[in-house]
Image 1 (cartoon, one colour):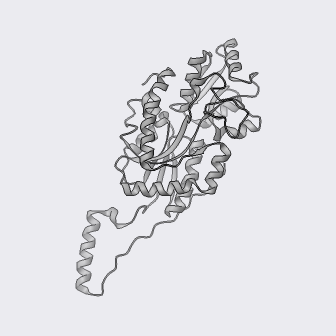
Image 2 (cartoon, one colour):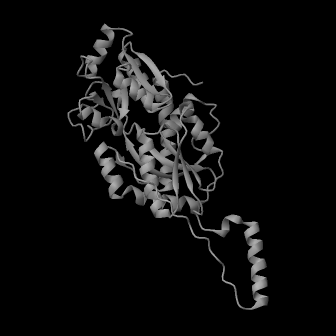
Image 3 (tube, rainbow, N blue to C red):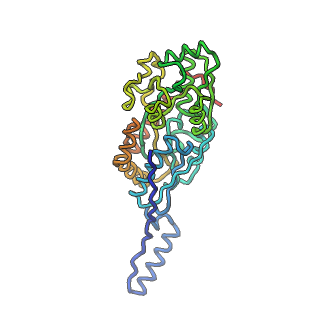
Length: 343
């Protein structure tokens, strides 16, 4: 995926009109001065300075790449710098909490995913509430996951994988980033199939991917944006897809339901969207929503998402709020089914 340089166009400060009349000028100047002191934010229209998007994942991960593409498009439309800051760790809770406690002024945003709600189930003391601590702004995209193994592993289906794992107990390692959908999918796979594979949690997706390619990890549920090209090049073997329908770029790979593993069917199993801290002004939210939705229909983003098999997800702030409420109900039973104990 090519990265687009993020534009940096600084907004111009507005200069009040001053009358030639000295008396009027004095009155006007005093009045405006008091207004600025009382409400500094009113001096310049939003956005008047750079915007940060905090990403709870490492640089180069699918959510990070989508965040950077979106940031570039947003910058062009808002005429302001939009930067991406990676803060992985804590099962996504470190970055998420930093935005929850940030000033609700529209200049610190969160790239949220399904981990926003699943991680709060696994980390109930994370310091924020998935629904109450944030202001929904816009969704970006949705996708499901692909179960992959190295081409050297002598299996061609999910059933083959289970049989091989049972014949070689404890020999296979299943990797996943902490606090993410792949962790939930991995544990559901283990608990429903009885496959005796080792769970190996990672803090950095980049390290997981390196170990996968080196053969230290043999089983992984990953997003299409990261895996499609490697599967097409023969570097990885795809066994199933967790979506309701087959992946557009991998039509020969069966779904989880077709593989007799319906508990792994999550459609979508992951999504990303932009949130601000609770209390972000409605006008700021609407400005950001319009810029993000316009960015998502840009030819560049459309081409990238189509190539990777992701689905653009346009929404209003209200629609995103409704979606989040449904996700908050969906994930607790899934985490429980996966046997993951809250900490």
